[in-house]
Structures are given as structure tokens and as C-alpha cells.
Length: 205
Image (cartoon, rainbow, N blue to C red; front, side, top):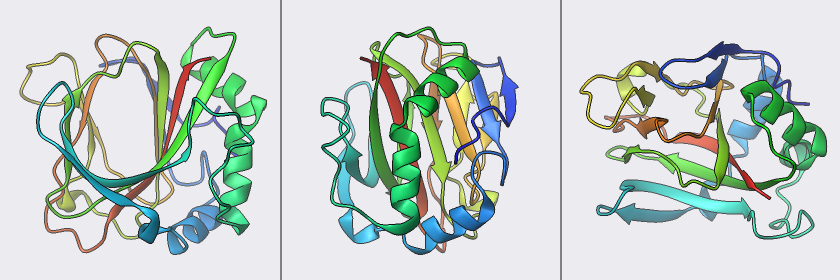
């Protein structure tokens, strides 16, 4: 269901693949997921210290420490199709191949996130046992002027991002974790809807 070999691959500022609408996920599927996004399940989270600061709403569907059978209560319909596809060995092997990652075993975490006006996630790199992250965006009418872009930087202190991906409906970004994979979610400004996404994190199994 998910065609991870589509998209455009970039090596700067670090290895990532950007998928336009329809390249990873059919537009029809993205529309259905957006319309049935379970906002009520998400809980507010705020952190303003340490290596990773954020203000968002989130929930975990799949914990990387659990077996694939330990799935959160089914969301049904198209959601179950997407979750089943993500949990397949085909997805794990394909996304690691697409990103140039060598790993014998990959444990997945699947989360949902939503950023409302004022929400953000500060610039950071991910923990060392993480292999990759993939974001699938589900906000039906998002525009760049609302902020919330996934900004990528060449280092920890440079002022301007090297690339910003706008989280429009049905688009996706996957990137390989490294010590220089600096990224952030830019602050959401006066948005008329939530910035919604499925987050897939791959860890060394």
C-alpha cells in the first residue's frame, strides 16, 4: 500500500526522501485518514528543557518495545490497512533500503501527532539507537504561511534551515538518523486546523 521507492532523495543537509501527494500514499487514502483522524485520543505534551523541547499533542499506537500483536485498539477501516502495511516486513526492508540503512532487525514505533497554534518541536538530533523517522502528513488544507514546516539544518547553530518541507495532505518525509540530522518542527502560526501526522520511528531491533 505504501510505495517507499517513490519520492525524491536528497543527501543535503542529510539523507532524506520527500514524497509528493500520491507518491507514497494514494490521495484517496490520505483524505480518508485525515477525515477520521482520532484527535480525541491525543494528549498534550510540553517540554522546555533538555536536548529536545516541544509543545504538541500525541499518542502512541505501536510501541517499539512491544510485539506487533500489541496494537492499540483498532481504528478500523483505512487506518488498519495503513498500520498493517507499516508493520509488514516489506515496509521495514524497503524503507531501510531506500534510505541506505543496513540493519538485520528493525523495531517500529508508530505515533500520531497534532500541533495547534503555538506548537513546535525544537531543533535536535534523535537518540543513537534510532535508525530512521518517517512522517506522513494529514492536514487537509495546510499552507506554508501557517508554519509547522519540517526544517532541516546542516548543524546545531546555523540560523537558516537548508530545507523546509511543508506538511500538506498526503505528503511525507523519511530521513536517516545521524549525528548531524538536525531538524525541528517550526512554530505553528495562526493555523486554521491542526498540523496532523503519522510518525513512524525505526529502532535497532
